[in-house]
Picture 1 (cartoon, helix red, strand yellow):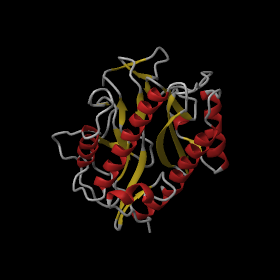
Picture 2 (cartoon, helix red, strand yellow):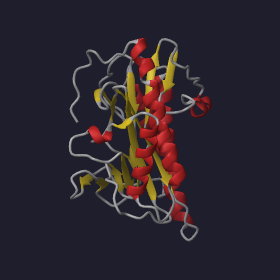
Picture 3 (cartoon, rainbow, N blue to C red):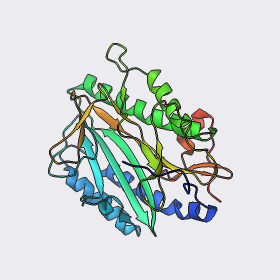
Picture 4 (cartoon, rainbow, N blue to C red):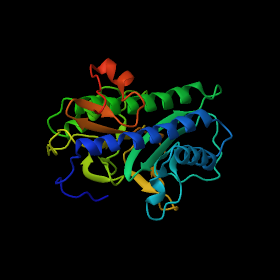
Length: 284
């Protein structure tokens, strides 16, 4: 994905207020999917759940606005990492499933992703390993969001994410999880994908200044093995090259004059950020 220059990446206070509702609609779509997901349901049925929720709240799927994509969410199962296309695949016990959703309301966008691991009592060790992968991915995201609250420059977020992942190796004899480098977070606003890029790992450049008006989607994508990927024959689904399991978590976050607010979390991220010493502040 190409990103433009940093000029014009900061929103006005009025524009930030307009981004609250699409964030909440996006969050609601993922809550509905979480409540519906179970072994035996198809990924296309989950797509319909998200679509009904977004439309019932006055939004439209911004994924459907992407040229060539006609679904509401992306459903990536097991070794699929991102951009998985919903279809007839029936979920099975033990599957690790990443759901990426986005909504547009009155021309403004929200974007968020969660990972869910379905229970399977017959494979407790595999399920535990997949849940650990999801937990590390999610917590690395929250550490990145927490760093945003005090960062001077945006690329400190990626540093915080990588630091957390390095401190939490997988159960494979201390092996380090793989952070994808070919796919990163992004700015968000009138378009779902805007400048600037948001790296999930350390880079030499400092990135743009963190100041009121910055709105970014922070989204680590992590595998239990390699960072090498390939795109499946559907020309959308990105999978791990070695077949290792994957997790994807994402939130859209706004920086304003009084602090930060996680737009795609109903409580603004308060519960998850409290243990990290950060108190999000609603957008005035």
